Length: 195
Length: 312
Image 1 (tube, chains in turn blue, yellow):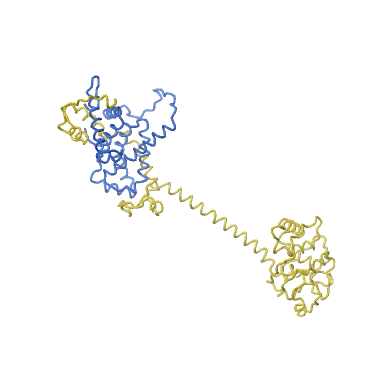
Image 2 (cartoon, rainbow over the protein chains, first blue to last red):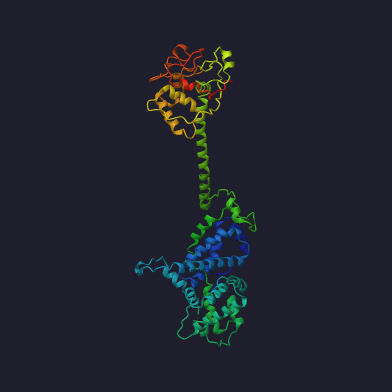
């Protein structure tokens, strides 16, 4: 399985970023296509009901601050996910203050379906299964694992983002992995996440 | 599952270094016990799905709205981005080749600014134009004649000198017409208080005198009376613009040879409606030595010693 959610831009990142900062929409699209899948996966684990919305808000914030951004690809990703985390916390506060009444159930026949939705679901079933598994972890552990694995951030950066120590980040990650292993190898568990 | 429920004894087949390797994406040599976890993490790193790339158009739209489009694709002039927010909001951006790339938000902002900046300018221009028109009507139209009008019936301060020059007797209550300069400026009238409102059946002569007295300094308190007086004279003179010539005609004053004199069109109390400066008509201010205004009920008012005029 290819490793595609990290460092797609690679060595060209500085040039791509500079072009995007100077107004090149195509170069911005390169940055977006590189980072958005990871961003959406991160958000789908932590806020499954509002992942796309928060991702869109995150990109609006990022775009507004894009001309001011300084840094390499690691800093770019750290900034992106920090922004997403802030939007996520804002969303959580908003939900707490304005609890929404659930609408009437929509019948299966009324659910809009895009062409090839079935195929998409089959193609991505492993990823979907992995996201579902991560969602069962405690939030801090899932957060750390996602930031390490999906966002590709270092332990130090994650510690700074979460306002904790690098030791705590490592412990949380290791605990989460062990819990994943327990879930995957436990009795009655069938993993569709690649194995 | 809370952490307290996690089995305290780990699989001895792997240690923390193996976990760190998993997190770092290192492949190969993964313990068997961790291979399902490795597969899960690999699925998380998998290639993007269509769903995850479906909102690219939205992101591009946000980019077009917020990032100024530059004709060059090189680094921005500020490079490290010292103060990009302020710079971008005030930097003139050349129109791009593709109109879709124009930031809509900036356009809206500029339109608002231009519109709001234009409003006061239009208002000030209009007010200035109106002021010029009024000033021209009051001062320009009255120039050369208002002096005579306002000096009607007043005792000149330098009566003897003027009278000697023109052959007028010092006791004459007329206006020194020959010596009147077109740009004569009447002096303030300290003893004149707010004029009373015109009577329901006004006498044109008294109305004109009232008009002549208050045209320069109507005063705040007398504004209502002034408006009434103006309306009455406008009716009598067949128009606002003809009040002056009408009053000059009624009061028998010359108008420097300019303008046509309207017919009185109404009862003339002064009896001087036949022409200016006609001593026989009894018109006020006729340059007839020793002539007395007749037919005017305001003869006594004309002799108000407190009202002087500079006939220089």
